[in-house]
Amino acid sequence: MTLSFEHENGTIAYDDTAGTGPLVLCLPGMGVDRRTYAKFVPELTARGYRVVTMDLRGQGETDAVWADYSPEAVARDAIALLRRLQAGPAVLFTNSYTGASAVWAAAEAPELFRAIVLSDPFARVMPRPNVFMRAAIAAVSRFRPLWIAYWASLYKTKKADPAEKRALSASLKEPGRMAALRAMMAADTDVCAARTGEVTTPALVVMGSKDPDFPDPAAEARLMAERLHGQVSMIDGAGHYPHSEMPAETAAAVAEFVRERVGA
Image (cartoon, rainbow, N blue to C red; front, top):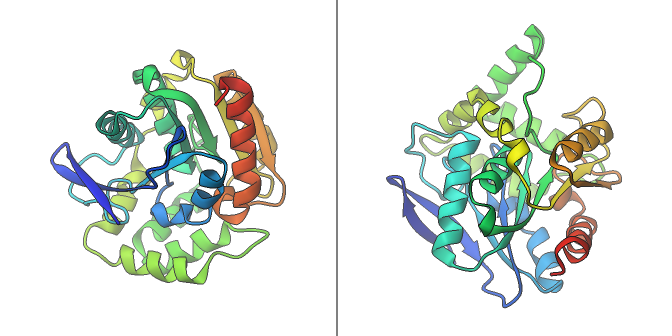
């Protein structure tokens, strides 16, 4: 059953497994929704965690009514949800776009987080794309079929789930959803990246070894982990969504890290 709460003049949707173990809050990446964690949640609950998955602003069942879709805004929403649940400190699992949100949230409210996990993150200031790439980005953010094709291409060893593909396409037809996607693509991550040095929360960078979004996924993972004084876990064969493509391996990596670093 979908749950929701009001925050900053909009409604944010989430699911809660209501387990008795430590809480893991999962934030999806750009242009997808919390269904991306459908295979990951059972793997975490089997390891004793309570799992909450949240739809980002403009995605899934969360409203598309805001002027601000930045990773900082998403981090504020995550903090508000954790305070509402009163179940922290939590493990924050993020993917792609929301890696920057993890940095900002951990710097802003460290008392709410026992660990942060950045999966295939865009959490630093990246080099400016060339003209061709800028044109491609503009196209996929404006035309839904192109975005769906791009999303599916980020799976490497296993294909994207057809049912999730259909559901995501239907969701993005709703008013405001593609506009929210464009706003995310245009958002500035500098504000979040500037707070990297403030993060003291134990951090894990999870990276699919075949992630096509990075020229060298392993090097990117090491770079981000060094900046956070964290650790790296490479998921061999996975693309940009290791939690969906290889959920058991990803959950095992998260559980091992949390157990070793924070004893939960």
